[in-house]
Each structure stands twice: as structure tokens, then as C-alpha cells.
Image (cartoon, helix red, strand yellow):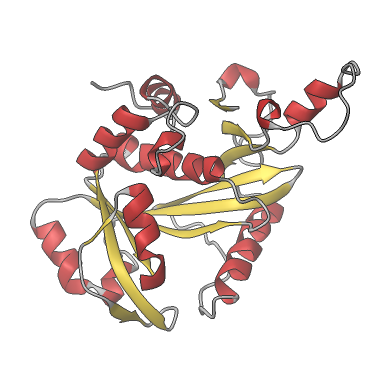
Length: 266
């Protein structure tokens, strides 16, 4: 089950150390398991335990050093095995927020959004002309990055939840017009096919990671249309390939945006 979490669900705690959970994702669905032995009557409590297995909590990264180190190590692991040279630590820049997916105290997924500011964005280094043109058109831009999910998880629903929460923050809370992401060309088809990004510039060498990169773009208009069309329909649309079916339906998105400080829109 995938659901947003109400504030009333959360026990009182120091918010700087344990920020509220924004969503829970149960990766294992009991209903989809096939029996591999002779049927027996359910033992009381077994179904409840199975439903709780692999329930990831998605929350904002706090100042807690253990979580921050866990997210940084995951990023280092996922990027370094591909041969990329990237900054290992997630810093606490004021124009940046990071989401983490946790299970049993360990970080299994992370994604960061960088908001545009006087210091610019990472994409300015490789694509200064493209970024200048977007800003010149009056577009408010942000940049997704540090996206990593532990390989052992292999959950499209968890990936969809992380991306949707970032999109809610970028498009609903910060009123961004475009979300940008620099990716290796071999990953381009994933973002284009499953998340409706499109290339906004040609392939170039990204000096930060010492590898080729292409700048992809997701507009607020495309995001809105696709969530309204597919959000929350992953059970019904089994043949649909888009990751948007793993996003929240509009009514749940509105509830999350309201919790984050922005009322629902039409």
C-alpha cells in the first residue's frame, strides 16, 4: 500500500531530528503473492506481519548525522560503481532539500531538488547557455539530482513516490516551471519513456563527474497532465509503462501539498 501520512499519525518528537513522514510505501503486496505450498489456515497475526514487511517511510532528510551519512554513502555507492566522480556528502545548502526512503533505520533511496538562486545550479557549469535562455524566457527552474535507490529494493513504486514528492515540492510549493536533470546518455531513455522528460540540449561532457551528460527537462504542464491522467492507477493499468501511474492520485497530492504549506489548486 502507498499512502500519504497524516500529521496525527506521527508521535510527538524533535522535528529537527525526526521530520514527519510524508508517505509510506509497502513494497511487498500480500495479495500478489502466489502460494508455493499446500494451503493452511492463517495463523493469527501472520498477515499483519507480512503487510508490514518492507514498509518504507519517505521523509525529508534531517540534520541527524546518521541519516545524512547513510544517504551520502548510498549516493557514493550507486555512482562510484558506474565510474562517476561525485561529491560524497550531502550538504545543508539553504536552496536544497533531500528526501530519503527509510526502512528499519537504514536509507534505501534518496533524491535531492536544488532551487535556483544567485549561486546558480549545477547545470550552469555544463549548460550555461541553455540555463540563461530558460531564465531569459521567465522560466523558474530547479534541478533534481543525487537520485539513488538501493539495487536490492527494485521498486518502481518507491521510485515513483520519491519523484512525485520532489515534483510536489518543486511545482506545487515552489511554483517552478521546469525541473531539470543531468543524466548519462545511456539513462536518457528511462527518463523520457517513463517520466516524460525531454532533451533540452545536446550531449556534452560534465566535468563534475568526468562523463558525458545530457540535460533533460520536465515542464509543470506535462507533469500536471500526466498525474491527472495516471496518478494512483498502477493496479488498473497493468500494461501502462509510465512511472506516473505510481504517483499519488490528485486528491492525495493535494493533501500532501496542504501539509507542506500550500492549499489545493484547480
